[in-house]
Length: 254
Length: 254
Image 1 (cartoon, rainbow over the protein chains, first blue to last red):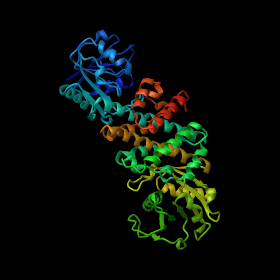
Image 2 (image 1 turned 60 degrees about the vertical axis):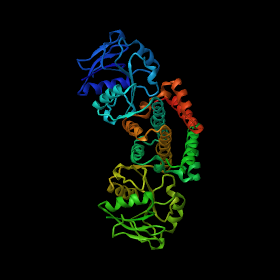
Image 3 (image 1 turned 120 degrees about the vertical axis):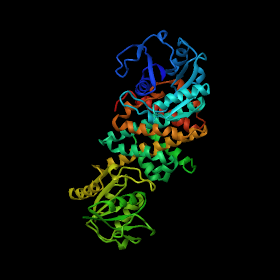
Image 4 (image 1 turned 180 degrees about the horizontal axis):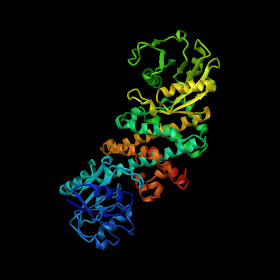
C-alpha cells in the first residue's frame, strides 16, 4: 500500500486524487487546499486540511499547484526524506527542496473539471532523483493504469511546449473555424467529424504523410479565394503563415 | 436502384466509389479515368473507361476531379437532363453545364488512400438545382449511411475554408510539435493521446470553454520560456500570433 498526500485540488490535482482513490494499492491520506469546501470525490479515509503544518508524512506527496508556488510550498512541507513530486511541465526537478526525495509526475493530457479522464489514456512523464524513487513513482502511475516515460527536465519542458501547439493552438484553430461558420449560419457540428478524423489520422500516419489541401498542392487560386473570404486581418495572417509553413516543410519528411 | 457513373478515381472519387459499390440500392455503372489501371475495389458490374465519349447515361454522374477541370468535363459529358454533381468545396453549382440537372455533393472529411473511411462519419453538404434533384442526391447519400446538410455555394466555400483551419493547419501544428520533440529525442507517440483528447473535447464542449494553457492564463513567464526554446523564427512567429489570438478572443464567448 502506497500512502499519498495531495497538495492542491485544482484541475490536475482533483483528477489525480479521484484516480488514486479508485486505485487498489494506494491510500490518499491528506489533501491540502487553500480554502476547504465540499469535495464530493474524497473518501472518508482522506483528511481535508487547509494548513500545511498539519501535513503528516506519506510515502508520496503530490504538489499540484501553479508553477510559481511549487518551490515555496516544497520548502514548507513539515517533513523530509519522503518522496515529494510536482506535476508541472515546465518547473525543474531541482526547484523542489533537496530535503525531499524529489520527483516529477507530469501527466501529458488536458484536464477539465467537467469531463472524466481515463488515466490509462494519460502518458505520465516521470523524472526522479534516483532509481528507487523512480520505481515507486512508476508503481503509483501503473496503479492508475497509465503508461510512463522516463523524461528529463529539458525534454519535459519541450513536451510542454509541443503540447501548447497540439492542444492550445489547435483549439484556437477550432475556435476560428467556429467563428467562420457562425458568420454564415452554419452549424459547427458539421466540422466535428473532420476534427476527430484529423486527430485520428496522425495516430498511425505521420503528419507529413497526412497533409492535404491547397497549401500542399500549391493551389494559388484557392488560396487567393480563401484569403478574400477572411474579414479579419488576424485570420488572414494566420492563414498566410501556416500556408507558408506547410509549403516550406512539405518536401521534408519527418 | 440508382445508377451512378463516377468521373475520376483519385482520393475522393475512389472512396465514394468503394462506398457506393457496397451500398444496397446503388449500381455503379461506369468509372472514367485518365489512364486505366487495376482498381481492385471495382466490381465486375462496373465498366472502367478512359474516354469520356464512351459514357452512357446514368441517374447520377459524380465528378470527382481537380477544381479547375470540373467545368470543362461537365461540358463534355455526352448526355444531358440527368443529375451531374461535383464533389468540390469551392466550385459553384453554376460552374456545371446547365444541360445537366446540377448538384453538389461535398463530403466534409479528409480522405487518404491508405485508410478506410466510414461514410456514416462523413457529413455530406448537398446543394441541388431543384427539390427533386435534391431528394435523389440525399437518397444516394443516405444509402451510404451519411448525414446530409443543405448547404449553399457560399456556405460551402466557407466550410471549405474552415476545414483548412481544422484539418490542414491543425495537421501542420502536429508536424511542428513532431519536429520539436524529435530534436530532444522524445517520441511523438507521447503526444498522441493529447491530440485525440483535444479533438474529442470539442465534440461536446465549445472551443471557448475548452481553452487552457499559458496564453489564456496570461502566464508571461511560461510564454517567454517557450519562445526562448523555439529555434525557428517561423515557429516563434506562429507561437506569438496564436498566443495573441487566444488572448484577444478569450473574453468573448462563442
